[in-house]
Image (cartoon, rainbow, N blue to C red; front, side, top):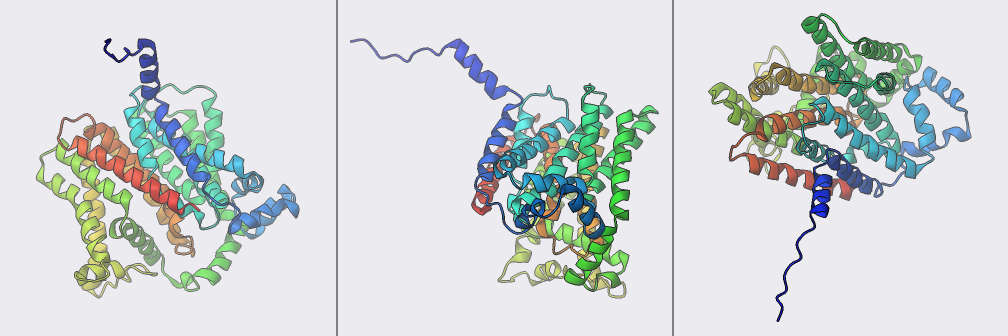
Amino acid sequence: MNELRPKPSTPGKTSCLRGILTNEWMPFVALFVVILAIHFNMTVGLADDAIYAAVLGEKSLWEFSKTNYYTWSSRQLIEGVLIYIIHYPLLWRVLDSLMITLTARWIYRATGPSDRGNAPGWIICALCAMYPMAHLISAGWVVTTLNYIWPLALGMYNISLVFRLTRAERVRAWEYPLGLLATLFAANMEQMAVGLFIIDGVLLGWNLVRKKKASAFLYGAFAIVLIDILYSRTCPGAAERLINETNGWFPEFGAVPLWRKLEMGFSSTIRDFAMYPNLTFWLFAVLLLCAVWIRTSKTSARACASAPLFVALFFGVLGNDPNRPFNGLCAVVESIGQYGTAIRFSNVASWAPDIVMVGLVLAILYALWHAFDSLQERLGAILALTAGFGTRMVMSLSPTIWASGDRTYCYLYFSFFAVCALLAERTILPSRSRLRQPVFILMGALSLAALINTLALAL
């Protein structure tokens, strides 16, 4: 009897399959397919989607843009695209999935050269898949994603170009005009404009200080951001909207002093990431601790790297326990309300929440400094978090800081994803530490859990 023997694999087919799996674009193709599947589970036409869908039946694009400019918003570019895309749900599903995928791709290009293999791509795509898409349903899927995800994606294209130019990498001629157009659209969204102002401004200064010169693109992109910010600040519709939204959402807003508004933005941002259960911050805390533990044996650095995880566990878990066995921790979390922590300089006890949060920020910055070897990586990680934090802090100046909800954290989430990718790729991935495999298993598990949760909520 002839033995049944497995057929030898065909070398050509094996090589072809290996080539597909190791291709640098493969992670992004996989992310696009997954995000597109989620988009087909989304119901469009809800909330403001229905309002914008009716626009072209009543007004021309010019009439709509002119009315909005004088009565509502400075986002003429974004809303001009929105009133057309809203009529093509299938096209929106494809384009919005593409925008999320391109965001991941341009984070990949911003954080390093394209010839470094596809492992960083898988890391970045897994991280971007963790974004809680359910945050973007509040004003309707199409309206909210056009106002947040599309400026994010095009803004990341700008950021990827300025980082590549700073690293003296090759940029093709056609990318310059495309990058300027992307910047123009992205900075039409006020929060994204703040992030671009911080990153482009710092990198422009860095190039001038280090190289005594900067690319014409850096000057042009930064000028466009400044023009967009000036346009939004002088738009009569924005001023009119501020009055209406103050009356409707936060009547006392005008009486709140500026320092308290800033504290309100600061404390609410820290609370919602570090003092509430948040998968992204938990993963960041684990990656930061592991990276610092691998990189240095310095006690102060390891202690500071432990702080985010301790805060996330003590305040994010124990401080939110409904049974309140740790009443003091609960009191700190609950002290952050509509007016921030309501800190009073005459009452030292009221300083406690802000002391904890400021201490957390300083610990993160100190730990990040020790998580990387090169100055560029250290400053890049700190710059990414600063820009992301700035996009949320600008909401301190808006009476809709609470009404706009979780969607205002969109850019900060992706800042954390970029920093997590740097920690995983530059410190943990090249190491031979026993922490390496558990960390990447944890990252994959959290990404899968977040995807399943998004799919369940994206109705």
